[in-house]
Amino acid sequence: MTSAAAPAQIRPEDYLAIDRLLSDEERDIRDTVRAFVADRVTPYVGEWFEEARIPLELAGELGSLGVLGMHLQGYGCAGASATAYGLSCLELEAGDSGVRSLVSVQGSLAMFAIWKWGSEEQKQEWLPRMAEGKAIGCFGLTEPDAGSDPGSMRTRAKRDGSDWILHGQKMWITNGSVADVAVVWAQSDDGVKGFLVPKGTPGFTTQEIHKKLSLRASVTSELLLDDVRLPDSARLPEVSSLRGPLSCLNEARYGIVWGAIGAARACFEAALSYAKEREQFGKPIASFQIQQQKLAKMALEVNRGTLLALHLGRMKDAGVLRPEHVSMGKLANVNAALEVARNARQVLGANGVTLEYPVIRHMNNLESVVTYEGTADVHALVVGEALTGIGAFR
Image 1 (cartoon, rainbow, N blue to C red):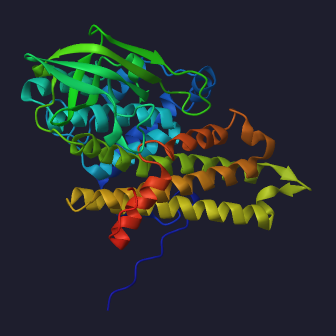
Image 2 (image 1 turned 45 degrees about the horizontal axis):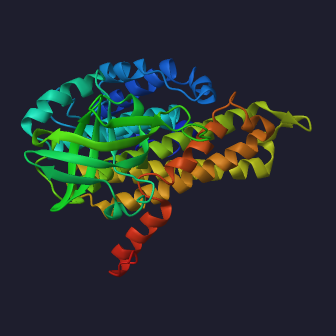
Image 3 (image 1 turned 90 degrees about the horizontal axis):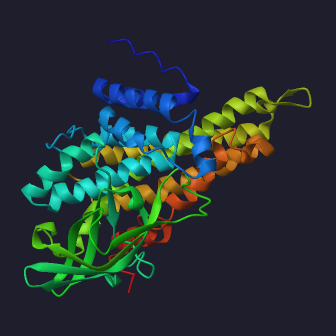
């Protein structure tokens, strides 16, 4: 007869003892990224958000940390597990969605496109520098009239002898105006093709998008391609269909499944701390039932979302994760994070709308996260088709 293990102590920061489900290596990676965020992001990100900027030197620091393309193998990349990458995304977005977006676009979109679909020469040229943060990439898919329906993109690639001529426009491109190389997707006579467009290529210009009230600590741009001439060596040779960009988006969406819960956790922790300190009617507001109900709901969503992300991470590491699973994860966790942020904002009262606390910043950022890389509606339809076998897009 063996004695039962002692029940885990309830800790607000890890209510369900999820730490026990992680390996020592995963915890070490998580803690390293968490410490970096606490040192280099959290003290300054309110100012970055207010000033609508993100310091470019952060890319090099993130490269030194090892998180840029960390889930890729070779070419200076760390070759970490999908779960470790997810945990890093969680910690980065607990700092700010803009920081996680920088890492996600760099690693899961631009670098992954080159790693998965590029030539050996392209990989050798770009991936080591991008992993170090010495070269920044962006991912040009979305257009003014082609968001949820990338198949309707109007950017064209036409052959001209041994070269290609690209003409078109891309919108809402993270890192666009600071990128050293843009991965641009275009329609051609024989399918959708990807091209590497280096900064400074004649005919290729960018314009930063201003007056954003969300993802302000992030560079968002328009890409303009005015008959840009590229050699065939700039083409990603291993794909000629929407499978190319969609595979990259699936990688990035997986990171969002984790990242959104990081934003939710930051909001919950701010609300819990504030509720214990803020006194009204002679006692902390945490002692009132209605505030405890809000805190309980927030804890529920943060822990449930973390378990969902962890389960999807284990599935991805086992090679059994499907895009439909990622759609459910993004749909569930971003919506949950929005609900947590809104409840946290109410707990903080008027203080909830100032940048002295992280809540309104995360709340505003999540309004972008719920839309980009597949809106909540689109992911609901993906899940619906998986359930019913009936496609509802057309």
